[in-house]
Amino acid sequence: MENGSLDLSAIREKINTVDDQLKKLLLERLGIVSEVAEYKKRNGLPVRDSARERSIIARMTEGESERDARGITLFFSNLFEIAKSREVADMASSSGGGTSDMIKATVEATPRLFPKSAVVACQGVEGAYSQLAAQKLFARPDIRYQKSFEDVLCAVDDGSVRYGVIPIENSLAGSVSGIFDMIGSHGDYIIRALRLHISHSLLSVKGTELSDIRRIYSHPQAISQCSAFLSTLKDVEIIPCSNTAVAAAKAAGSGHECAAVCSPECRELYELDHVAGAPKKIADNDNNHTRFVCVSKSPEIYPGADKMSMIVSLPHKPGSLYYLIAEFAAAGINLTKLESVPIPGCDFEYQFIFEFQASVYSDAELAVVNDITGRYNAKFLGAYSEMI
Image 1 (cartoon, one colour):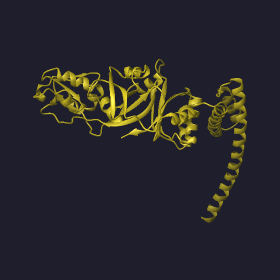
Image 2 (cartoon, rainbow, N blue to C red):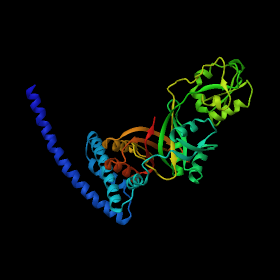
Image 3 (cartoon, rainbow, N blue to C red):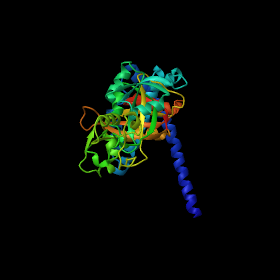
Image 4 (cartoon, one colour):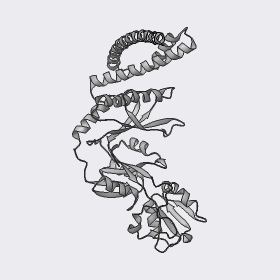
């Protein structure tokens, strides 16, 4: 065992010697990369040069075994990503600007306290979950209701409201379709998030029995979250509508044959009652939460912001997502959400939603954000904290 241990130690010393040489050569190569970055910036050349990368790998793997060629290809592919990251950083530092500078400037310009009152847009009508979220985000919100999520963002864009509150994800049903892309395409920024507990009830006009019900209205996500209970009902039509509070309003204007799946808060608001014979909570799972975000037209970053979001379109080539994830891992940044979504107008092409924990005060973590937004087709969606 001792001889084996000594042999292994001797082998590792040989590896250490090679590693020291690799480190010296890597730093030497990165110094040359900085010269390349200066030349490319001066001559208006792009950072990425795929033809050059292919040429290097072809030269380095020529005559090598298949096993060694794979290792060489992986080594140089990672080296190219490191070099491109250095080029982007050098170009940004020499000219100023970049996402990291925008974030720092926003931190300085944003007031230290989140506003207690503001004019806020929400989708739906009084009693909607978006309204409940707005009331938790703001102590005294002046709420303006809109017909759709798109209308909420348009109200933010045209200045008729300062903020918009929209749902982005449910713990049971998943992401709300198209919301992140919608925020990105409007050029809006997430400034705060909220996790709201969702409780669904079956409400109708007072005196309604479960056997009376022939039609039930609700939002499609609420319907899916109560599927177990709803599947037990016979000869009942389930009708989707734009909002759970809109469903409550429909039920209030109908007789005993109509009910709504909505929040318990709608009971008093629309003078409804729990349907007799139905449980007061009808969701499949009581551990049901929806994440809402508050968006603004201009970036705002308040103290305590420890989360960031962005949308990234990656080159359609092997390893693109791997290299990006590796960059987060190398910086010790924890990804809390990674989701692919179709690119509108492009068949079978996808962009990626990234949510991650990062500090606006960490130069190292901001450098990663700067690198990604500088190298890829990426949209920074905001830095914020999340209320629970």
